[in-house]
Length: 285
Image (cartoon, rainbow, N blue to C red; front, side, top):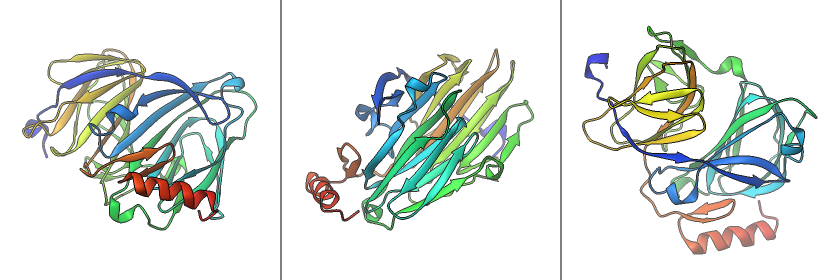
C-alpha cells in the first residue's frame, strides 16, 4: 500500500484515564475502561503504571486468577517477575513484552524486582473468541532485542510488538483477533501515516509529548487516548508531531461476541463466568 492510497481515520473521541489502585496497592492509570469494551472490541482494558516512588508499585500483583482472555504487559522501565500455576517463570525487564494466554484458567503473580527507581509500562487485555476461551494456557517472554524496529523516511521509529507494519512482522502474531500493537516514537516535525485495516477497531494512546491525529489534526495530549472513528473508506491513521512524542497504536479485528466479565474472568455468558469462579475456588486452574 503506497502513501498516496492511505486515507486517514479521524478522532471520534478523546478519553482521559482514571486513576485506580489494583493488586497490592499499585497505582495505575486505567485508560481503556469497561464501558469502552464493546466499542474497542477485542480489547478489554489498558492500564499504564508509571512512578519512581516505590510506594506506588512495591506491592505488585500477588497471586490472582484469569480465564478467557490474554494479557500483554509491555515494560518501558523496570523489572517485574512473573510466576504462574503452569510452572512458568520469567523476568520482564525494560523494553520487553510478556504475552500470556489465560485460556481455561491460570493463576499468576507479577512482583517487582526493584526497590527503587522508575517503573513504567502498560498492561493490555485482549479478548479471546468463544472457541478459544477454554484453550490451553500459555506464556511467552519477549526480550527487547526480539522486538523488530523500523525507521520511516520521516524519521519516525516504530516498534512492532504484534501484527505487521510496512512489511515488518511483529514479535507476536495472533490469528484470532490479528492485533496490531505499535510503539511509535516521532521526532519534532515528523508526519507519518500508519496503515490499519478498514474493519479494525483502533485507538492511539499518547504517553509522552503531544500528537495531532487525522487529516483534521486533532490534538491529543500526553496520557490521553484517542478512539479512532470507523469508516469503510479509511485505512490508516496520520500522526504529526510538532515536538517529540511517543504513543501506542493499537488495533484489532472485532470478535462481535457477547462479553460477560466478573473481575479477572471474561467469558460470553453469566453462567460461564459463574463456572469460572467455581472452578477457581475448587483449585482447578
